[in-house]
Image 1 (cartoon, rainbow, N blue to C red):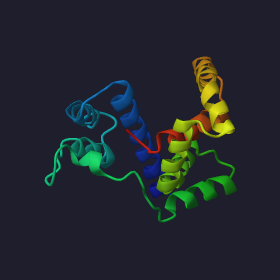
Image 2: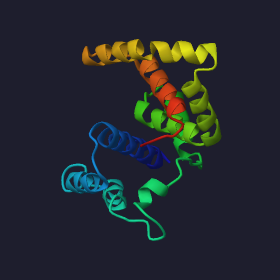
Image 3: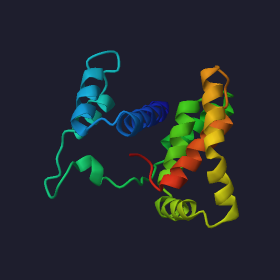
Length: 173
């Protein structure tokens, strides 16, 4: 059970690395394939890194583009990650990476809600949505300043990540 929880944490880190490389670094699928393949030659060598590298090279045999871009950003769960987080809580052990992967799975399962929330944030039709949108750059600066200063702001950071997921309407890319 614990091994599966750790694997969920690894998958969350891989997904976050993908988002940063794709959206900030503007890496192509070929570049992503090469980066993950290179990582798989070193200390990050693992089955998950290997299959991540592989998926970026697979073209959609039934249409245009790459298969990775056709995967729906919605998933279910069997409970092993949740059980790992529950066990960690019972033992008073922090498991932030695994906990964040569980949160991402919760959000992933809410595809329809995320799409609707993104529409609300784009239109800024509700006063609360408008207030959040108007203040998000200050929120981001505070979180960045704290991170760069070595100050833990997990509540602010995770709340910002939650907001970003709702605002985008999708989990990655």
